[in-house]
Length: 125
Image (tube, rainbow, N blue to C red; front, side):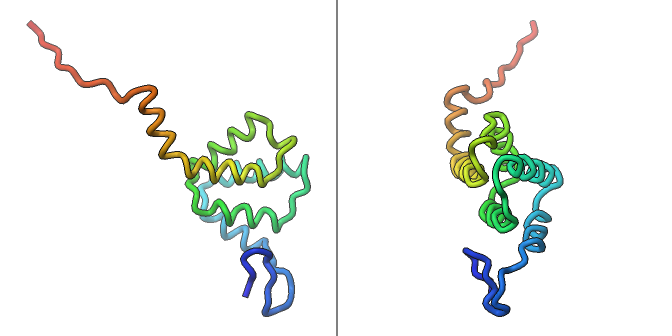
């Protein structure tokens, strides 16, 4: 049995091999999301140490978040260039918080910008 928090396998008394677990989690995502995730992992590795174990727990934590939310949050992370001083845990918090608040954001934007204009009939005389 593998511990969900640290990855220790009690049946073999060894640390779990995270590579097949990462591949399983990545296979659930779309191709474009996988490309974006791969690029962000490479970029973060340039500035911060990034272990395979950390990548696995990151992917496991964002497993239930939609692909569009993941891509949008990573785009915001790139735009603000947070990868230079913030690590993968900051990105995970961005993704999870945006995922929780996305429905509220849509309602707020609808109030600010308004809905679609009403359809009016044109009378030709």
